[in-house]
Amino acid sequence: MAGEDQIKTTNSSPGHDAKAPTPHLPDAPQPSQDAGAEKVTLKKEIGLVSACAIIIGNIIGSGIFISPKGVLEHSGSVGLALIIWVLGGGVSALGSMCYAELGVTIPKSGGDYQYVTEIFGGLTGFLLLWSAVLIMYPTSLAVIALTFSNYVLQPVFPDCIPPYDATRTLSLVCLLLLTWVNSSSVRWATRIQDIFTAGKLLALGLIIVVGFMQIYNGNYEELKPSNAFNFWMTPSVGQLALAFLQGSFAFSGWNFLNYVTEELVDPRRNLPRAIFISIPLVTFVYTFTNIAYFTAMTPEELMSSNAVAVTFGEKLLGYFSWIMPVSVALSTFGGINGYLFTSSRLCFSGAREGHLPSLLAMIHFKYCTPVPALLVCCSTTIIIMLVGDTYTLINYVSFINYLCYGVTIMGLIVLRYKKPNMFRPIKVNLLIPITYLLFWAFLLIFSFYSEPIVCGVGLIIILTGVPVFFLGVYWKNKPKCIDRFIENITYCGQKVCYVVYPQPSLPEDDLIACNDAVVNEKEKTLKMQ
Image 1 (cartoon, rainbow, N blue to C red):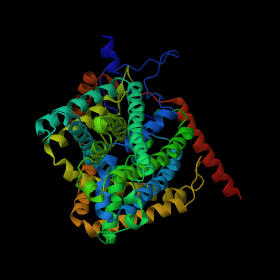
Image 2: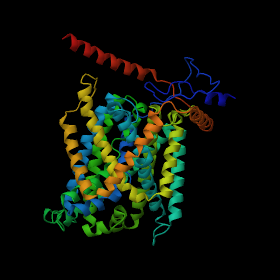
Image 3: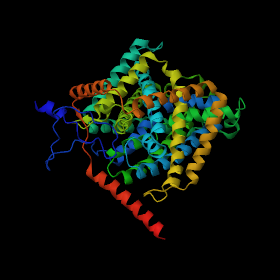
Image 4: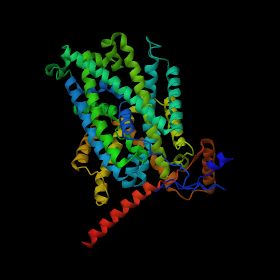
């Protein structure tokens, strides 16, 4: 049958720098090379607006509705809490500028994983990939999905916590629905991201406008300097580090656009533009949202609330207070979509480099979406949601996430030293990564001091990937029975998912070849001098 013939098309190269072994499948016909035939490859369908929506939509998930409580508890005063929110945005901006340089210098999907693999080698890249696929992104997805179901079910159970089975069932339905959408069309997934990002910005905009109205009416007692810096406790350095980590959780996701670089329209232009538009906008929104919260609530009320935005709505919006839980639900729904979209590209990139099963490096022959990678992301999230203690795991995730950021930005400095003549469309001042790394070191040192068990478990999770790397990746001459088993599983997966390897994108290949030629020419010139 034609459909089965399409599925058997597996011998095309996974990518320009692909290291993933192609399973030998008998009688596998080659893909059509007709000039008029449309290539089976990832489509460049993400423009500047959708790129901004991916960054903003991934950052603004559930964090701004949850984290204000944690930041305030550890900072000890309203004023210091607001400073930490601004500082969190500033540090995220420093990190995003470094990622902008890396993203246009190494223009591959996969983000931190691709950069770390290119700079530090396969083992370091695999450990980052292992921790991300095993726990980091599935746990974040599970937390956002459970937050979504809790807010949707809150009106149904107004006087109690929604039942365990109900929240898990609704979370599963939401995950499966968005996995289907992302598997069916990149365009649908980006449109959902655009719409829900606009919705969550409107909801936070409403909070900010109401807050300004409160200030105009004179309701800003907690924001007066004499009250704002009235400490009810003196925070230690360790507590300040924990407050900053809480705020960082709300800003996490600022690097996600780098995971889909190959699907960006004109990435060398739109990647840095989207970053420079989105991070300042999110910092502005977060800071003024927190200011608005303090016009309606005392510090004690905010710290006793498990749903800060809902409490804000109940106090100020009256009949329209239902808008807040709906807004949080919509915000988290968009967050789930964004995490699925970007984390599946991380699995895809890892498989293309030979660090994950080759099936995950394949895309649907008609829709051109990474269906196996999406199914893996969905499955791991469901397992963690049903088996693991999700809210305990998030503590380990925050540490692992921040550790990965620092290693990646350290790689920027190493790459400058190793390849000084490499073509860099954007080249940031070295003070930017150095400043970021100083904050990073401060946070890690005092996080270890304050929460040694959490940080220790986080490191153990990362290091469990070492034996997996040597058995699964480094060990090349495996017994033939294992190779045959992997080939059979891959072939069955292809038939079930209707997937093939993407064909190389010639313009991207030419761009890489041109980049290499420029570097070689510069090196020759320097030697002659």
